[in-house]
Amino acid sequence: MERWLDAFVPKPNEAIPGVPDWEFATIKVPTLVIRGGEDDYDHPKRTSLEVHALIKGSRLIEPPWPEDAWERAVSRPPTKDGAACSIRGCWRHPRCWTSSTNPDRGRAR
Image (cartoon, rainbow, N blue to C red; front, side):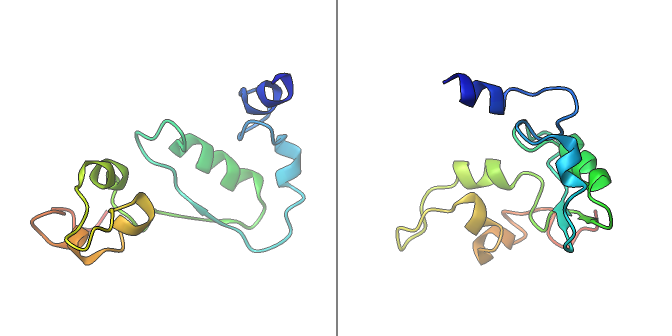
């Protein structure tokens, strides 16, 4: 349990708990960093900005899903065929992109 605690408790000089900042400088492949959510406690915007700054030549992009994709996914009942609308699948699902369920559709960010 102590190893887990050591790895997952945030520390100075670790943008991501358990990964020392210096290790990001060793990444030598093209890297795409997707911006974290404005109100996401698990994947905060600040972390994605820090990681982007630590990986030389990385590219930071806006997420391709709506800012509230998680809230939509967990609040939506399963589809008629019984499939749940998950966080990974919801933003790709046509039902999630209709103007009645997604007022942000087509709106520039």
